[in-house]
Length: 145
Ligand code: DQA
Image (cartoon, rainbow, N blue to C red; front, side, top):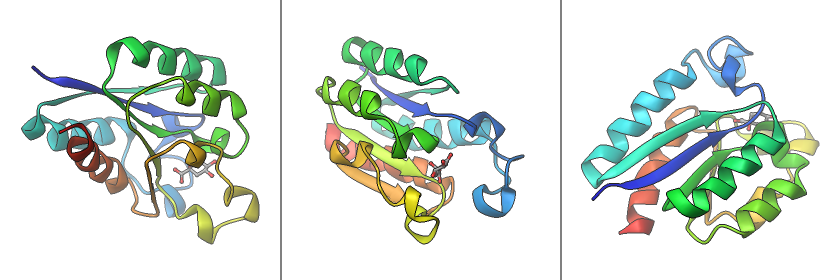
């Protein structure tokens, strides 16, 4: 029986592939979905990739994950650095949480160096480009096995 993993994406990530490609690359969120599905399938992991520009929607999906998902992979975008509410929602989720950043946030502006989500995440991928998502899926497979 497949285990469902939510791959949640925050603001501006709908523009992936078009937005600042020198930082975020040319691949789109649909490419990320395909890569995550390919990484998860051999491990019996079904991917549900979602994106919203709205904090409350992301929180509602984290609540939904309490009933429907075994693990959460999340790139909260700029909410990483601001959202205690997303941290609180993740703290109400019992399964493993992995945090992904396409860019190496530690090489960028100092306001990107702090992550509220890292207080909850079992692990963080940063600076691996979009490949970080599928690597996180592989790690999730280990954590769920
Ligand atoms: C990001 C890094 C954040 O600082 C930024 O606000 C994003 C994307 C990343 O994937 O590298 O929107 O989370």
